Image (cartoon, rainbow, N blue to C red; front, top):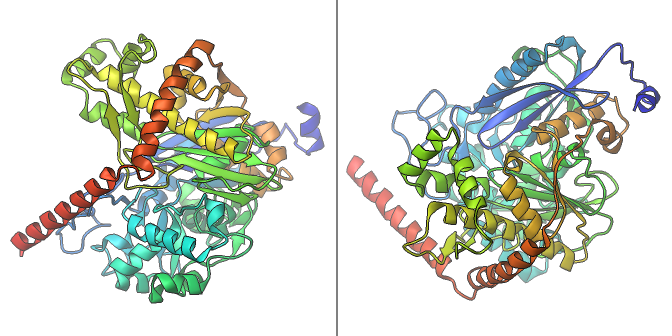
Length: 582
């Protein structure tokens, strides 16, 4: 390493550092990283004050104009954009203080975001909810990645694209998600045309925060390709968009299209205002934005074909490099250079993983279990995991579908919902908990099989994110997939990945591959599939696949019918409440 540092011109007597900022679903995390070897020397976390807005708009200074909170329909998930600025004001200075370094030694900052998270803004970048007269309009706020209320628009996009034989559709596994830019943009147009007209740009949050840092709006190549249907240098045609809605014809030209920046390039330099927020030197490099999953691949040193990286948190995103282009049914997308230059970057995902476990512990576990966990000095997840670990595979007699937040891959249908089969009066909380852990592993196995069946090799499985701490879960994933599983040796994989991109943007490394070699984290724990467990889980997986196809591929449409009934009931209830308030 010393020789490599010398070759790259590093003077170890004068250390240089970069900042990586990872914007998650509930908080932003900043990490200070040493440029020459990737050592993480300090970190800071800031939780979003407004978290995820799902019921009513916030009534504080960023919220409702007349004090009457607007109730949101089902499947909505919004955020307040100023919470993202607050991360820069709090987490970055905290990380610098924790590191104990001179801020003048910082040469660059990089960021990543959950995707697809969209911000409607004015021409100068001001979010629409901060514009007078729009604070009480739900469509003026950030639409978080897990906002699934645009499913009807996604269905129409998919049906029309299939009917017309649009060439870009197979690049996305044959289906566009309700989470993505076009479906959410069409929903905004059709449900609040006034807000749509007032919006000058429809911006990925990954690009908006970079805009806040450097004053330049640069659209990153990653989200443009995976979430913005940008393939082979172009977007869907105006003719196609007009067929969806005549007023949507100029969506690309008037709301979406902008300069696209390559990953690892500098979008600009830190402004005086952003320097004041962060305590960093004005003028340092600001890297082009990126997605939390995709920046993690270099952090895990997983930049070669066949290395599948799963970033497991509230949801899971799977990214994989391939040497060749293949069309994989049900994938989120394949983009030339989407992760690193020179390779095809593939993306898949599961909309709910940690969210499902958290939902169950909050709503499905009796007080006695919480009390027992507290008495044992454990969190409820640790306590349930310990109980579940004592079971033999299949002992609980349950099988679950991990669709509590819909299905991202391979069905791409957010009208689907979760289910547990096999419950009896003898079923205990630890039984259901383990069944849910296993269901998410079966979902990942389904994705691995889809890649392989389409000709994309998967030879290694690497896990990053908060869930890697659960050893039972990691062993289950190794046994279900039959792959050796290693965890990333960093608790801040996405933030480290953003720091690596910042180092390249600052010119300290020639490219992402070179930076990943020296700055990427070493492997953490390694889990080897246990042959007897692999056999036992194979039998359960076949049952999962039968259930998966029965409810997910049209054999039984009950989940969609229930969603329609629920939506109708919610609309009736909202109308009744509005009638009472009037």
